[in-house]
Length: 519
Image: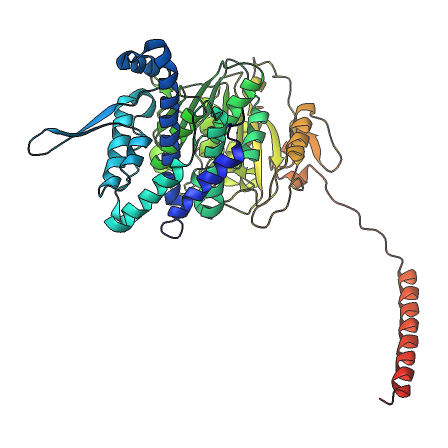
C-alpha cells in the first residue's frame, strides 16, 4: 500500500518530538515523557483502528465492540469530569490521545494527561498496573511553571498528532523498533546515566545467541532494564517459527521497570512477567519459598555494585551464596550466583556481562570463582572491546555457564573452558564503539565449534586453569602477541645516508637559484 509508513519516518517524527524538552530537563528524565506519549499514541490508534473494523460486524453496539477489544488486547475507558460542587458531568471523553489533543490548550492539560493515564492503567490492571505511577505530566519541578508547562505539553501533543500509528498503516514491529530506537538515542544523550535502562542492541543479540533459547523455554533477566535483552531472546525463538516461550524479569528502578512493561506491550509480549524490586535483596520471581527456575538466564547487571546487601544476605533464605559470600563493595558475584541458582539444575544456561576484574580478583571472589570452575559450570569466557557501552569505556567480558555440565546433565563430560579474545572485534566510533553483525557472528561460530583459533580462541583444560590458580584473565590462555618485523639496521643506515646526500644536493641547487636571483 502506498500509504504505509516506514521505520525511518516514525523514528524521525518521534525523535523530533523530543525538541519540546531538550535543554529543559535531562534526557534521562525526559525519556519517560516521550516514551509514555509514544505508547499512548500507539494504543489510541490501535484501539481506533480495531474499533472501526469491528463496527462492520457489530454495528453501533459499542459495548459489544469494547468487550471484544478488551478480550484481545486492552480497553480504553470513558472518563467523566464532574463539577465539584454540583457533581454534574461537565465533560465526557474516551481516555485516549485524541481526546487530549482536542483539549491541548486546556489550562489543566498536564492534569488531564495524568487522569487519562490513570484511567487506562486502572482499566487494564493485569497488563499495566503501576506503569504510569512514576510519571507526572503536571510536575512543576520537572516541566516548569503552568504557562511554560502547558506550552511544552501542547507542542508535545502536536508533534505526536502528526504520527498515524494505526496497524493498517504501521506494522506492530515498527512501533516496537521505534521504542528501542528512542531508548538507544536517549542512552547516547544521557551518557553514563543510561546504564540503568539500556544495553546496546548488538550486545543483547550476542548474549541471546550464546544462551540459545529454545521453544518452550522460560527466559529470565534478573536486572532487565527496559527489557531489550528479553525481547532479543524471544525473537530468536520466534525466528524458529515458535511463540512457545515465557518471559520473566525484575528491575529495581521504578521508571525503568515501567519502560520494560510498555516495551513488552509494544512488542506484543503482554504476558511477560516483569517485577519491580531489588533482585538480590528481595527476589520477586519465586515459587513458594524457592527461587523460580529458568531454562535461560541472561543479564547485564550493574558493574561492581557497592552496598549490594552483603550484611543482610549472610543468612540468605534462598541459600544462593553457599559457595561463598561476595565482598561488601563488589556485587558482581552476587548477581552471577543468583543467576546460576535461578537456572534449572542439569539444564539451565546463563550468559552475563561482567567487568574484567571478575576474572582475576582474589579473596572471596577468587574462592567463588574456583568453586564454580570445580563444579564444571563455566563454559566460556569471552572478552569484548572497550567503549561498547554508554555507561563505561572499559572492556568487558561475557561469562557463559551451563548447568547441563553438572553431574547427570547432558554435557557432564565436557570439562574445558573456551576463552575467546574478541577485543579487536568492533567498529570504532566517535563516542562509542560498535559490535557489528560480522563480529557477533565470528564470536558465536567460534563459541559453537569450541575449537582453538590462533590468536583468537583457546579451549583450556581444568588442569591448565588450576595451574593458573583459577585466574581467568584471557591473555593467560589466548596468545595475541605479534612478532615485530626484524629491522635491518645496515639497510636503514644506508637509506639514511642516501637521503642525506639527496638533501645536500637539493640545498646546493636552492642556494645557486637564490644567488642567481640576487637574494
